[in-house]
Amino acid sequence: MRVDVLTIFPELLSPFLAASLIGKARERGLLEVRVHDLRGFTEDRHRSVDDEPYGGGGGMVMMAPPWIRAVRAVSEGRSPWRVLLSPQGARLDDAKVRELAGRGDLVLFCGRYEGIDERVRETVVDEEVSIGDYVLSGGELPAMVLIEALSRQVPGVVGFADSVANDSFREGLLDHPHYTRPPVVEGLAVPEVLTSGDHAAIRRWRDREALRATLEKRPDLLERPEVVSRLTREQRRLLEDKLEDNLEALRGVGAGKG
Ligand code: 4GX
Image (cartoon, rainbow, N blue to C red; front, top):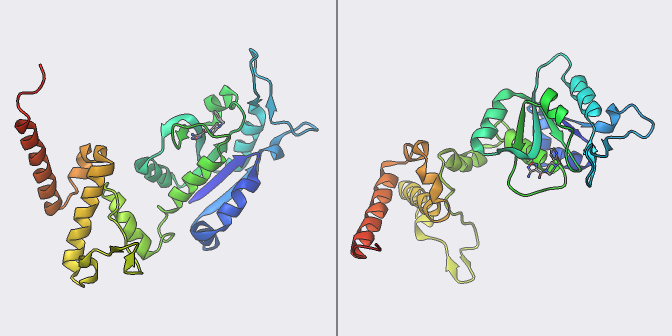
C-alpha cells in the first residue's frame, strides 16, 4: 500500500506516522507513506499557497497551481487514486476504507483555510472524503484517520489478537465488552462465564453481548441485510425474541392514537 500526502504542515503527520503499528508497518515495507510539503511546489519568492477569494468575502483560498504541480510530481509513472479530505465528501465508513485500501496507491490532499480553488477538484481529484459532519481547521487529521484505518486493512499490519477483535466489526456488529485484571473494580465483578474456561459458553456470551450492545447503541446497524445475514443462529433467535417482545408490548398498549 502506498500513500502520498500533500500538506503545508508535514510536521503534523511525521510523529504519527513514525509511531506504533504504522511506524512498524513502514519499517517492514508493508506500507509506504510519503509526506510532501506543498510549499515545495510553489514558484514565487514567498512560497505562497493561498490568496484572496474572487468575489470577495472573508478568509483565504488555496491556489490551484501548487496542488496541480505537486500531484503531477508525486504521481509520475503511476496512476494513484486522488482523494481530497473535506466536509463536502462522502462520509468515511468501513466499506469506504476497504474500497480505498483496495486501490493500493493513493494521494491525499490536505487543505487549509476556507478551501481549495474549485479547479483543483475538477482537474486532479478523483473523490472527496469526509470523516464526519463537523468542521476542522485542515485535512491533516482526517488524512491521519484515513491512513490508520487503511493500514489495518493491509495484510500483516495488525497482529492476530487485534484482527480477531476487529472481526466483530467485520460482521457489522459492535464489539462485545472486554475485561481484564483485577477481578473486582469499584465493587464490579467480571462476568463469571469469562473465568469458567468453557470456550463454547464464552463464544455464546460474546455473540449475545455483541448483539445486545448493537441493539442498545446502534440499532440502525441491524437494518442492514448484510449484517443480519451474518448473524449466528443463536443471535437470530435472540433478535426474534426481542422483536416478539416489542410486538407483544405494542399489542398490550391497546389500539393507540387516532
Ligand atoms: N472531514 N476540514 C479540510 C479545508 C478544505 C475545505 C474545502 C478542501 C475543501 C474535514 C472533515 C474538515 C476542514 C478539512 C476544512 N479543504 N475534512 N478543510 N470534517 O472539516 O474531512
